[in-house]
Image 1: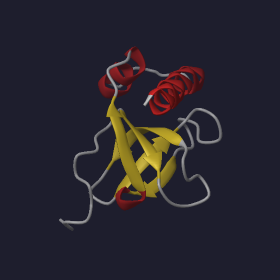
Image 2: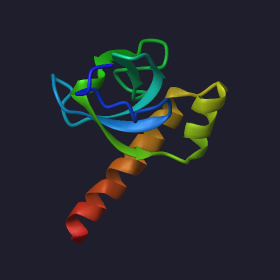
Image 3: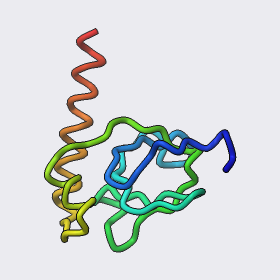
Length: 101
């Protein structure tokens, strides 16, 4: 495996895109292989049309322990609205942490 590729990103992790036109956006990892991740945010990248992105172009934000993340890991049906709501919550938490110091 290429040492430059982050191998600590798993299904249901929240990642931020570091390259491309979606740079700075949050996504849930819904599938993975050694080189690519399948990403969804419930908005322009839905669960039925996920974004395929190389691992080196994303950065892990956190290992989410929300109900949505548990559903993704277990293979249960997840709605795009649940992804949007969860990612909006994570974005607001990150913004609050950045503003707070």
